Image (cartoon, rainbow, N blue to C red; front, side, top):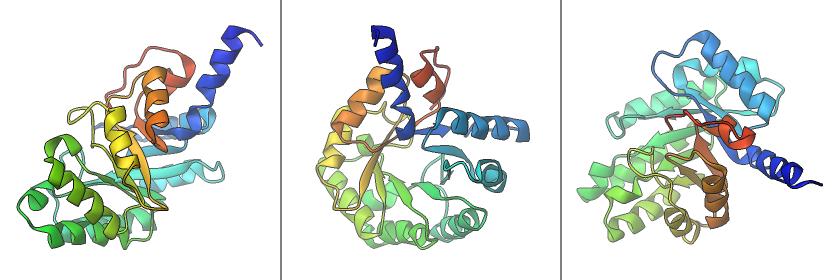
Length: 230
């Protein structure tokens, strides 16, 4: 095997860990179809799309083995009511969404409203699909981080995420390792935020991430130039 073949094989091996993300405003039906087809073509773990397109994405990806993932209370995090989140989560699941990434009420946690913080997450978990909780670690004190991790797991989170996007934190191996050292059995770590290169992807997986959320997945696995925003 040549060096070039070895590099190509290694890059392709990253695809099953990547959640292919397209959540920009103004995406059209054709954009969503193309995005889902791209996810299937490259063998990504999931197509992450706006919740309003969940049913379409589920139809396009049916039978491919590629999951449909949606986000709620995002990209502006912590503005939805808990009741609204729970209802949206049920709607996503009913439309065929297999995973949900959710923003959380960091302000409640920082105000000492731990029950409310916990119940906000639990209401989304009750929809019955795996939930990935965006913990916004850079915005928290060390003590708040510890409580956020524990409360999210108590509420039933399937994955803990370092942050919602690169605007909060470019995915940092140290943040991933922090979460990986604290997750309980059955809970995993997803890294997100400004993941644009193979080197970043590998470092985050080595630090303990099980999934990577990025809009630069195609560039990462194909060696092209990244233009992704997330």
